[in-house]
Length: 248
Ligand code: PEP
Image (tube, rainbow, N blue to C red; front, top):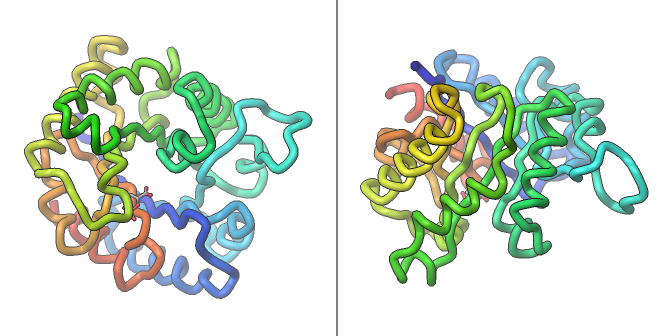
């Protein structure tokens, strides 16, 4: 089954309203590459303004609560993201799992909340360095997949992002062989659990992707796109990644 390439920018806690020009430039460049789906996930505070300045483009949240509403001071619910014009949400990023103690069960609840609100979901998994060095990366990540992927969903609306924690923001990247092995293992586990639906799910790689390494990372087996942090903040750095995806 042909899966469209998907390149997603995660702006993390970066971006004031003067950054909207970069988003406009990114989406304008993406218009020339119709084979690639391009999305930007800015901070919550910029979602509405980004949707307004780039109508019809894919703008997403970086997290959501597992409940649709309630007494959760400071949290944002998935229906609120949809109401603000978002069409997707990232859940289970390692900066949430590690920094905010989110468990697989929490991540699964967030993914279910996002899907119920009509959003597409990018669900992140990835191992810490000690696990990679001990040889346990695949088992670790497959346990995260088993614990955090919901039981039923539209496979076109749930993507998995493999993001080794030690590669995020460090400039380090796994070998192409290691990326392909991990993505193959994730696809295999999804196929065992969900059958043919696994072939429709997109698997993204994330961790220090840039314009130089994107061509080979995006070409690795079972890689359908990239989740990009630092290099997504400017059109100058992000557009070459979109171009690399379009060239495949
Ligand atoms: C991320 O935070 O999702 C990420 C991949 O960051 P970076 O590209 O900066 O490593």
